[in-house]
Image 1 (tube, protein in one colour):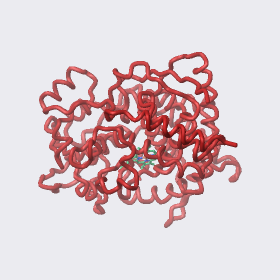
Image 2 (tube, rainbow, N blue to C red; image 1 turned 90 degrees about the vertical axis):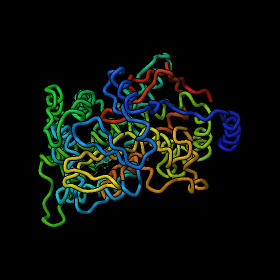
Image 3 (cartoon, rainbow, N blue to C red; image 1 turned 135 degrees about the horizontal axis):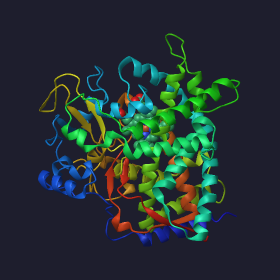
Length: 477
Ligand code: HEM
């Protein structure tokens, strides 16, 4: 007999006993006045836009961020957000600063393009993320977690500390390599792509506060040479992977890359060119691993300091899965796991800001907007907004329970964006995250070495300022 029932109910009561009297507020910059926030940011010397956000950004529907040469409007109000993100006239395309920063890596691909070009790309890429593809991808995801468990076992038996950030980046990159290209991260090409990507992540100019503050609208940004070199290396290898797929028999691969290669423009019947394929697959590598890695880093950090959350996850996994392998059908039933992931995405949305630019003079709420103004859609502040959430800073996965749904403000939760540009990979990410959480929590305990030092920073994604060092311990059942 599996001990699911017995273990489940005893763990549940353990979990109940572990419920803390004091609600948990995970690390965040305390909102300050604009001047105090500016001084804090300068003192920290990290160029951290999160520290620069004034308290008003967490309580007003729209805030004018006054410290930039270009006008920056940060929008929180759900109706205004909807208007911007679903605008059919295309006056709010992706922001030029972001597009310029990503262009050397991903060209004019789905993440950055706009108008008819974007529509065509989206129509061609959507089928690669259909439900049926996701069930196939699940097998590759599980194989990556198998390998990762072996590595973690070794670290746990030696008691060696490791970087949680790097562990999650490696695991999610491995999953992307296997599901997109049918190759594991252990191959030389994949490893080289990953290493070059680390350079891009650390130094891409998108995240430079200096450009945001001092540059006028539409000024072309210059990436640093090491970043350009890294992009060239990544694109070279992506080209090799595309070629290996194109030169093989049609049925040789059954992965996301082959679905993109097989895609046809609905009107012309044309496929993506080789360059377009490299662009699109670059985006899938970038958007497909870095985001999930960011969320899982925060999630496992929170678990490392909240044993009552860990106990409830274990109880649920025992009840739904028992002792056997975690299957695709289980994932939907892991409701508490899903809510823990959702709540982590609320407090630490991987894409901290989703910047757009106004291509013509317009109006947002009571604000007049000039051409070239930066429109900051900010999951970070919207998700922590005083008027949109009850106890916004508190980590409370149960706020997503159906019986508490009435407490949620429609349109105030947008980790995957909203409207036509919603994330293509949202279902993929949720499935992958539930699988990883269920499997790793079932077998390991995590403990962060210096939890009090952890602080968030907005880089390419929302990250800890310093990588989080932690230890894993094999759980004794
Ligand atoms: C927790 C994980 C993830 C989060 C939080 C996330 C979030 C987002 C957000 C906020 C956007 C932009 C929406 C906008 O600009 O309006 C986006 C777009 C996109 N994401 Fe994700 N994403 C995640 C995982 C993934 C994965 C796993 C993939 C693919 C394997 C992916 C592929 C894309 C693509 C291709 C776009 C561009 C869509 C378009 O413009 O039409 N993402 N994502």
